[in-house]
Length: 135
Image (cartoon, rainbow, N blue to C red; front, side, top):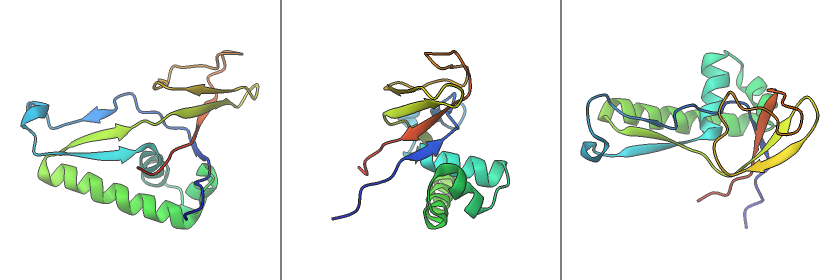
């Protein structure tokens, strides 16, 4: 039996959870790839922010091995979508949000946009703890 997955810290919340080639209806595309928030956050920290895999792991609360696996999977999915013209869907699971200012934690079933703030103190310093199951 595999061990339970630990909480991951995700500070990136996409504004648009779906991307597809321009001018082609979704129904006419050959397929889609699903990018998890963990993969997206790994890509953001490693490719956009320029952090090492070790630093990415520290930021997300996961091991460097997990970071490497997420990067490999994300790059494969993105390459597939770009080369084959697939849509990219960002999977958004049930999350637990945490305010860095007041420490308040809450569960949210829908996507929180970057303009969102803490429901208790209105601080914009919030991040996500993912609690996902592999499915």
